[in-house]
Every structure is written in structure tokens, then in C-alpha cells.
Image 1: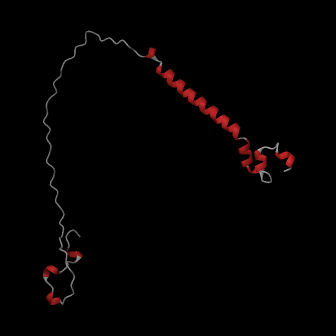
Image 2: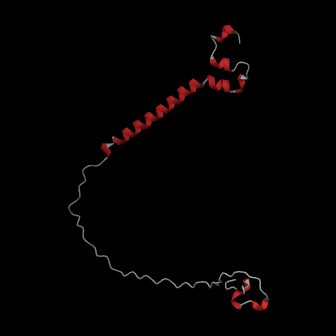
Image 3: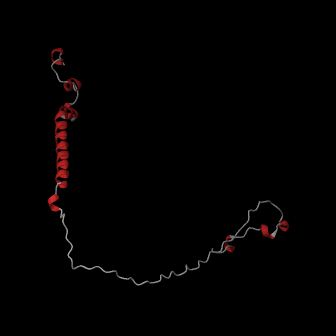
Length: 130
């Protein structure tokens, strides 16, 4: 860019000198101020419409009936409800599954004749519930 044009050029023209202006970033930055003004105008109008709607919604006094009269020929009487005893059945007995208990055995390698019967670990087929 020539030195005489730098003083009168826009900042975007200086930044995008020698770059592809058709890519889209140049156009977006060039129209940013217009889009910003448009979005602020739209948002402020939406907010004003909401505030006006809330104000007009609260001013509907003519729709509310303030004087309610009860006719004199209405007589209320107490009604006795029949008392029924509530019978709660006892909970059914739940049979607990059989659980085979084993004690913690320290594993010690010994000859077969020296093994105690309580130290023998049962097989999985011998356990209940399998």
C-alpha cells in the first residue's frame, strides 16, 4: 500500500492488505457495526415488549370479580363418615436362602493323612443354592 493512502485507509484495509478478502472474514468485520446495531435494536424491542406485556397483564382489574354474594338458601350440614378399621395383613415370612459358611483357613501344605475334616474346602457342587 502506498504511503499516501495509509493515512486515509481504513484499518481493515491495512490488516487485509495482500490477503484474500473474498474469504469472508473481511466482509464480516466490515459489516460488524451494522450487525451490532441491528442486534441491539432487536433485543431492546423484545425487552420492551415483554415489560409492556407484564405491565398490561397486571392491570386487568375489570376482569376480577370483587363482590361475591352467597345465596341465603344454602345450608351446610356435617356428614359423618363411616369408620372402617384398616386391617393391615402381616408381612409374609421370607425364607432366607441357605448360605454356606466357611471359616478363614490358613493354607498349609501337609500330607493327606494329617488333614483335619474341618479344614477341607468344600467343592462348588456341595454348596447349597448352586
